[in-house]
Structure formats: structure tokens, C-alpha cells
Length: 475
Image 1: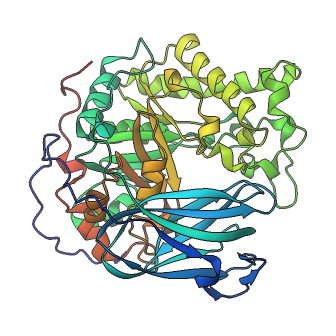
Image 2: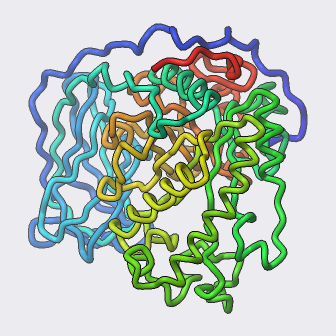
Image 3: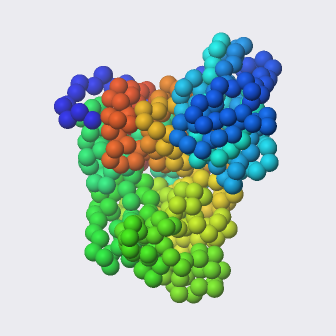
């Protein structure tokens, strides 16, 4: 961002959780549009063979369908595809804009749905661009979307912890009241509310984020033993005392005996699967590795001490542990969904009932429905999305595909969605929190979009938050 202070437009009125609902757009009544593989334009190494498109192997490999849309509105995209070698993700581009990814995990042809895409009447393009690649594509079918159920945004404010304290209940009440009408502006920043990322946003927009993201990584014992230091807890208290909401993730460095600690995988990268050796999470959680179990409990107890400091300071926390699990790149996701769910339950039970942490709002960010531990230990669901540079789409397909009767948030992102598009599409993420450093730079988010987002009538910034110490609690 520019270091020069800028004049922001006049700020809109403080958003209210009672703002009018989202606009109702006409439901499309046209029939389906079928696009066989041979109708697609091919780019890079993609090729037509045996009645399907293959060759999604290198960056830039892509196919594009050009189709005539009979009526402006929302459509579902149904790709008939198969994977080569298991789970795959590939980018979906509509009229050149990256709207998200389709997931292909069947090695026989099956429909892969991509819901609720807005297209105007007339000529439109739908492209599939190599991300992980290694799929075969037989056809695309475009069908009208059903109108979303208004009850989608009517979520409970009741927390999973029966002993949740007043500060957590007040915060969840506000978030539940706002859901579907407002989007809270968030930002990860190592130095908290007044760190470089938040300061850059304030310089450009005259506003601070409402939600500040921090990490408990350097409280992990295997990092503390190597001299790691952090003031993340103090930064969280500072943010809360200045009116902001706090969210924490935990890049959990594996215990010392399991660290590779050589070559490209030194100790400080110990949350990655490749930086961990001789560790079987399933063996730990089912009792076969007693030493590993004891070390994990030790780590949980160390983190509990820091969360207790926040509870003692009156700070409620949007708590997002064990994130991005199903991707497999972090060790807590490397042993499959069953072991992960057992670890989630261990963490939940120990923090909630052994340590009496009643200030936590549990944000599950496992990223795959098969890894969901169940609503009785989850208060909110997070999605982490990194679609590339200068992408401002709502990512509505992901929003509507991932529903658990919980508030859905962009718990970590590499972009800002355009609030106007979110409102149009109905993809009203509870909050949006870009990651640190370059992800809030001009290269990723242009100044005009930053201004548009932070001064939008549907976006809540720090200055527009209510007093969460006195916000009325609801059941």
C-alpha cells in the first residue's frame, strides 16, 4: 500500500444488524444447457481424446466453453469429470473471473457441482483451469439455480460449551444477529490491531479492521525450547480493550522427538507434514503411542495457559485450531479424517472441561465434510481461500456448498470479496480475514477495492462495532 495518507470517502452510517435483507433476484426458468467436450476451446496441453478433455498437467492448461445464456440470473455448473490419482482441485473461471475450484475425487466419471454462479443474458464463457490438474472432463451442464433458503442465515447464538462465559455469549449473539446482513472486516497481523497490516489499511481507508487475527505458534513447547518469543496474548488483550474482536489460529509445531530439523525442514517449520518424522496421529489417539499422546497433551496444556490469560483478561476468542486439516500439508491432517476428529475431540474436551476455558468460540476449519467432528463441538465454520491476485469475487459456490447450520466465515484468505457481489450472490461471509504481509499489498488487493470494501454500508469495521461488553445476550 502507499505510505502516503489518503483522503477516504465519507464513511457510511454505522451498519446495523437490522439492515434490510438481501435483494431477491428472479429465479431462472430456462432449461439446462449441455456442453460436450468437443465444444470447448483448448489451451496449453489440453487435448480431446476418447470423447473427453485431458492434459490438465501444467500451469496454463485450460478449456473454455462459450455458451448463450437465455436469462440473467444464477446457474449451477455441473462438470462431468474423473480424477487421475485421487482428490483434485481445479479453478473455475466464468467470463475470466476466478470463482473458486471444483473438487474431483472419483476415478470414474461423476458430476462435480459448482453452485450458484451469476451470469447475464447473452454470451458467457466457463473455463476450467489447471490448479492441481490431472483430471478428465467429459461435459459441462448448466442448469438454473434454486433460490437460497432464507433460513440459511438464521443461526443459533447458543455455544457448544454449556459453561460459556458472558463475554463469549455476547460476542456470539452479535455475530449471529449480524449474519446474513453484514460482513465484518478482519485482518491477520502479527503485531495486532496496530501492526503494519492494520496501519496500512487505516492509512488508505481511515478505518481499522473489526477482527484481528493472531497465532499461538510461538507458545508451542518445541518452539519455546528453541528460544521463540511472542507477545500475541498481549496484542490480543490490547485489541479487545480497543474494541476489536480477536481470532486465534495455532500453527502447532510438533513435539521435539518428531521434528525432522534438517535440510529444508528445520524445527521452525515443524507444523508441516514434511517437517515431521515417525509420527502416526492415529497411533497417538488410539493409545498405541503413549509417549506421543503425553507430548500432545503437554502441548495442549501449554496453550491452555495462554488462553487462560485471555479469559482472565475478559477476552472472548474466535478459536480456530487444527486448521486446513484435509489438505494434508499440516501434520494434524496427515493421518486421515478419523484421527483428526479424535484429536479435535481431545483438544475440545481438554480445553473445555479440564482447563475450564469458557471464553472460546470454536471455529472448525477442517475444509472437508468428511472431517467434520459434529455440531456439538463446533460453533462456527471457516473456509480458507486463496484464489490469486486481484480476485474480488464472492466465492459463492463454496459458500453454498459448505453448510452445517453454522455461521460461515472466510477465516483466512488471500483476497477481499467485493461486498456488492457478496450481496448480489447471497454469499454473506460472517467475517473476512486476509492473511498477513503480501496478502494486503497492492499486488494482491488494489487500493480502490480496499477503499470500496472498508467504506461499504454492509461492512463492519472497528469504528462501527457496537460495545461488545454490553451487547444483549440471546439464547
